[in-house]
Length: 257
Picture 1 (cartoon, one colour):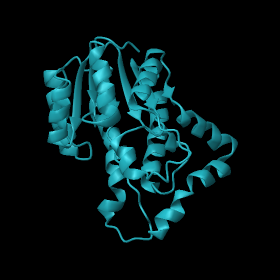
Picture 2 (cartoon, rainbow, N blue to C red):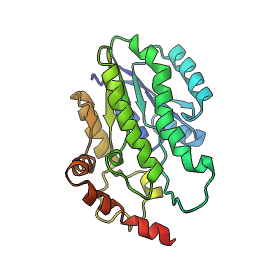
Picture 3 (cartoon, rainbow, N blue to C red):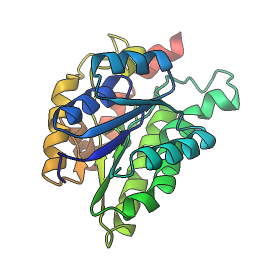
Picture 4 (cartoon, one colour):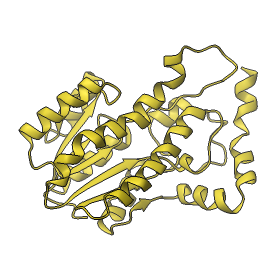
């Protein structure tokens, strides 16, 4: 995949991995559009990187996706790369009473959102000389962290969807990549895992993740699994019971709260 001169749309690009990746792509001479649900975060991102195009949009709302598609294809018809990065991660204790929305909101954002984005933007991408879709899953797509059951299920689903999408698009000019980050130093990780939970976990700096992502895309590495994400995938095949037991240790602390 070429990494210069593209027009790139990054969902969830107002902070964390999305913003760091967007900034790196801007520096390579790409036009980068980022979306997010929080206007204040979008404004901060724009201030940090004035070349970014920012649009408030929620991937869990179909009407937002329709409006985003209409605006982006009108104002940026050269759009040729879609990066489905928007995601939320929550600790969920299934013993506690939750509303349906509280229990499944991650499904709407992390799984339905990328699916809807692909469905809406695919006809446009197929008309480009070359194009790419990058779905951001997680190392937890390969083995779950049981304190975050819905998040892990959505990322496993996105991994499966990416594989099927890649096969169906094999005779088109649209490449399908999957980025499966390991634990990365972001607000999302800080909000989800305690210091106790992070013992024994190698947390990757965001800059290192972005560098690995850029390298993987440049080398047409269709599944990019930096650091411990690759180890999780290997362990899920070689010793699934052992690695699940290791990731299950925080559950007792959660249940005791």
